[in-house]
Structures are given as C-alpha cells and as structure tokens.
Image (cartoon, rainbow, N blue to C red; front, side, top):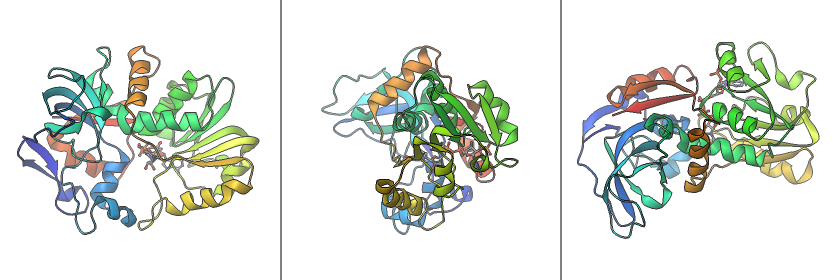
Length: 321
Ligand SMILES: NC(=O)c1ccc[n+]([C@@H]2O[C@H](COP(=O)([O-])OP(=O)(O)OC[C@H]3O[C@@H](n4cnc5c(N)ncnc54)[C@H](OP(=O)(O)O)[C@@H]3O)[C@@H](O)[C@H]2O)c1
C-alpha cells in the first residue's frame, strides 16, 4: 500500500508518498481500507514537531509514527481477534494518534463509529477531531436556547462545526474570522460576523454568555471582559509559542479559574465513539453540514499541507486515496 510518510520533523518538504507493507490488525483492531481522511491542525503539529514540548509524546529526536494523519473514514476489510461486532464490509470512521494518510490503516475497533448511509465518506472523515472537539466545546460552554456565544476562529475546521452545533442547541452565535470567510460563517448560522483584522471584539460593547476560543491571540483578561458575570470562557486553542505551545494559557486558566468569575475552562478534547455517532447522526439528518473546502488526491498531501502552512483552510480539507 502507499502512504504519506516522514522520517524527520520539518515542513511539508519532508513528506513523501511511499510504498509500505499493509498493516495487520492486532487483537482488538480492524483493518480499514481508507476512502477519505481529513487534515487537522494536529497533523501540522506532529509533522513540524511543534510545540517542542509535544515531542515528549510524538518522539524526542524523530517522529515515532512515520505515517501522518488522524481522522479517517473507510471500509473494514479484515478483523483481528477479540473484536466485538464489526465485520469486513462495514463502513466506519474514527481517529488515531497518527497513521491514516494511507490506503489502509489498522485501528482499535472500540474507537470507531459506524458511518450512516446518508453520510458520505468525505463528510465522515471530517468528523473525528474537528466535530468532536466542537461538540465537547459547546457542551463545556453550556450552549443552549437563547444563550449568546462568541466563536473566536469560526471559519476553520473546528469553528465551522462549533457554529453549527451551537445553533442546533438554540444559541445565538457571533463568529470571528477573516473578511474572506465572513459569508461562509454567516451561511452556517452566525447572526453576526466580526472581521478580526478590522475590529477587536474584546474592545466592543457586546457581552456573551460563553466564548469558545479557537484562535488564542487575546489575553485572558480581555476575554473575561466580554463575558456576562455568569459566563464561561472555553480555551480550546492549540496555538502558542514554538516551545510550550498552549501550555502557558492552559496553566493560566488552571491557576486563575478557582478565584474568578466569569468561569474559565480548558478543553482537552477526547476521542469518543459515542460523540462520533452523535455528530454523524446530526449530519445524516441535515442539521449539520461539514464545510468542506476541497477534496484532493492523498498522493498530493505534501502540496496541500504546504499551502496550509501559509494560510488557513475554509472549514475542512479532505484527502482521498
Ligand atoms: N482543545 C483541543 O483538544 C483541540 C482539539 C482540536 C483542535 N484544537 C485547536 O483548535 C484550534 C482551531 O483548530 P482548527 O482545526 O479549526 O484550525 P483552522 O482550521 O486552521 O482554523 C483556524 C481559525 O482561526 C481563525 N483565525 C486566525 N487568526 C485569527 C485571529 N487573529 N483572530 C480570530 N480568529 C483567527 C481562522 O480564520 P480565517 O481562516 O478566516 O483567517 C480560522 O477560523 C487550533 O489551535 C487547534 O490546535 C484544540
């Protein structure tokens, strides 16, 4: 089989389209023929080995897993020992720490969800990581009928799901993004869109019941200022410096939260088959539509990622073997 591999940390230039042995499913795993995979910020972090502190997990000197890719959808072709009810021919989707930008991937069966027939493989591949993070973020934010919610970073992979899920729950959403993506964010349900290049939302008169921060960039004190007294700030950004990444903000939230109102929360999204099933059901009944900018051949992943190293995607980008 062929896969997108890398042997050292670096830019997209270190990626290659390589011939590898097809993996064998171990106990508890299934072998999936990948029909679609999606790119997440986390793939760029593992490729670049940034923030450096994350190399403790990815591999200190070089990447421990040499095939890139977390989120995928495909068809089970073989089943390892002690796998519950999945069989060859079942359509599934899910995530792993790395390894799915490939024609086949061996994945723990327990973390996978069944793909509903009404959801395409491309759509299903956008749900792990991005939509499940968004679902966990709107829960933590207490999004509900009539509550006002600011999504900072509304046009990206996580943001486009966050806006839609908050709307499904009845919240009134303001989205922050660049001018070029304002129409997209309005079209998926934001009542108001703020262009971060022209307006600093933390200096405006509006107060929100919750802020979901997918971009960072503003000090915590500025974010607290735009919340109602009972409001909640959800830090869900992986951005930060090259060494510690989001750690300073995560620690600042932990250290400050017990002593202040409005409330401050860190979101560390967890892979969950139940959450995958929940978002897929919303897509199947048309309540949420993944915002897919484009689908590209998997073999061209290096070129696609090179472009993403310069600029953000509008919603999600899908790769297809
Ligand atoms: N907490 C967790 O467990 C978890 C899980 C997954 C992801 N994340 C993090 O969530 C963040 C978003 O991920 P993603 O996949 O959605 O990234 P993405 O697709 O690259 O989207 C980035 C978003 O940020 C916006 N943005 C850029 N600069 C901004 C600024 N100065 N002010 C406001 N918005 C700005 C972009 O808008 P334009 O494109 O319109 O410029 C875009 O909407 C990342 O930091 C990622 O690491 C966290």
